[in-house]
Image (cartoon, rainbow, N blue to C red):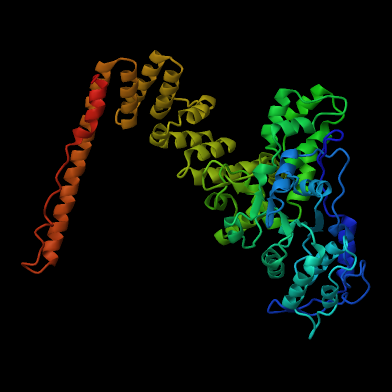
Length: 593
């Protein structure tokens, strides 16, 4: 958690393992209730027995309805606290971000600073039925008023056959709720994502949002957007939202976080690198801060320069908190797709041997958990946080070895070769298949020229120069020489590309452009006429072929059609266009007007 009182730090409040174990043990003897149309549930064995807080027989974990403790050195994130001060009177506030972005810390800090009455409820995966949900809501209220919601309490003790139904208990709770909110009050539902998707939870949450007293603000903290209907509230300006981007630490906040009590701070280069590598992720910043606490300035700089998801401190956190509870199949999906530059379902199918429906489900689950996010570049793919990606790749390497990783890159390269030349080059380089990398660039030369992708292509060719000159490579090299101002070298390599493959139109066009841009108009003109002539000959050949095919179709139709019924239009040959016209603007430009 974070504060400026002393030296800033970020901490997190995971569930107490002893509490979780105690709850599981307490529930081990409980009979499973049945749901009747989502309304009536048979009474669990523990209901009606002894309770920890008198709400019901349900074993309430008192820590779940109390604000998490904050360290003295908690760094106050004033821009976010100020935002909450303004927005807290909205009907609903969403705080939505991936794991480790400090959602709980921020809300706990806000709740200790605000003068508003604050009810806290940290949810877990056991809280997926209406009895549990309401029991904890009552317990949260009783942290402030010892006798809050007595009639709801009584109904929760009588939920067996013939007893209270869900709708009746929820309605009663809503009638009693104004007693806890005589003045503006905040109800914080923390870690809501763990119970999202439950019909019971959705029903109670919807009832709270639509029917709770006007004085009550509901704050939902979650790793994914809750499955509750808030379209009307958003349109009415009654929904306020904080997202991952808002919760990312700014560079100035990172600087404050790493300033020590004795006045030491990170140098600008280390701050910039940490800002870029962490992407403002609070969990990674806290782990880095802990790791360099007792290091010298030089050692801290060296640690940050090598920052990776495979470092021990980050690795352990990611293994335990981010992917630890996922199924083996889901973890395998994450590890394998972490190799991809653009994480899409078709790309994933190349490296994960599962049906498309299963892959789509993994994508949906991963996005809802915040493990992958939409690529900000505007593409249709997803992306991993860089540190999470490095962690997953490290885990994959440990699982299948470097040779296995190269084999997966080979599969990804084969898929990408016909879809994305950049991705194919990346994967073939990672697979150390340089011959395939060369083939991709050679076959994609028209696309590379059309997209202006010379820099990326040249970065591969410069590192893996072919043994013998290839026309497409000389085209790319000529453009890079021209950009560098080496005009003679650019012309020489452009002409070499033409001499290697005279029939490659893109090579001739490239040579025309470079000759024209360096003032060699006579050479440009000669090459342009050559290009026009070649194109016209090809078009003419295609025209002859089309006419022959058309004549054949006409004869077949004539033979198959009763005499006098054939269409006179069938035999009309296509009219060849004036091919040279489309080149005229280029020729005029090259000739200087």
